[in-house]
Length: 155
Image (cartoon, rainbow, N blue to C red; front, side, top):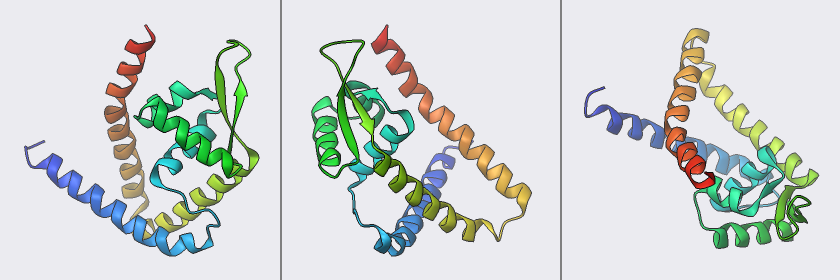
């Protein structure tokens, strides 16, 4: 990859995100709960990985425990997350996604799939499969340093 390729990839990723945000903005009129990006991130992680410790949520979000805690508080006030005692550690608290959170995220993800389906419909199936494979590979490469940092912190 030449030196300009990361910049070109960044440009295209940014363009894709902006297009999806624009489309989702139109779709979000159906949302009863407009959430910040931080809240959306915490909610997605909690739904996918629940139950998890607050520190683990902060690590996955790439933020501080204090920011994660405030975010959990705001989502708990909306009935999307709750805190439960960690039975394996009397001092620990687990963050747990509620059924309402699962329903909300399922609906939001469906709308994202629908928005992408419109764009992908114009691409040949083999190009769609190649795009998914390349995005999966890129995500794995980008996630590797984060996973290594978590492993070091837990060692």
